[in-house]
Amino acid sequence: MGTVYLTRKAEFAASHYYHSPELSAEENLRLFGKCNNPNGHGHNYTLEVTVKGAVDATSGFVVDLKQLKEIMNREVLEAMDHRFLNKEVPEFETLIPTTENIAIAAWRRLEPKLKAAQLHRVRVYETPDLFVDFYGEA
Image (cartoon, rainbow, N blue to C red; front, side):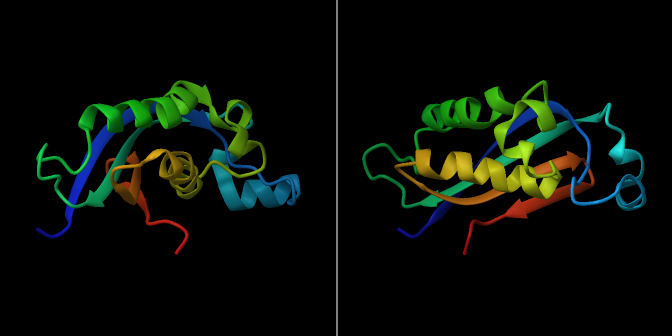
């Protein structure tokens, strides 16, 4: 029957700041500007998770939607929603929590948990007109 792509969307709010310990205070301020404020700033992010696979002949599904929602909630939303990413999410103790790195972290959290369908894309919107797509390590 071919491959079907299914996308589920969720929202979360989080704060962060951009800072590299490898740079001086002046370099951080020049590179990141107001986003270098150690008190942080926040966003209402939108997470889109796209999976792909064949439609199951019995259920008519590519993936059980309830299971996909539970995985997204457990692996990403519970870990990142209403969190100060730099201080509360382990990946961002060493990575700058840019939208790019948030998408990669979400992929790495989700991909091993999906069984019935294959993770195709993680999209993270930082604002309505700014988003990042990540298609895995390949």
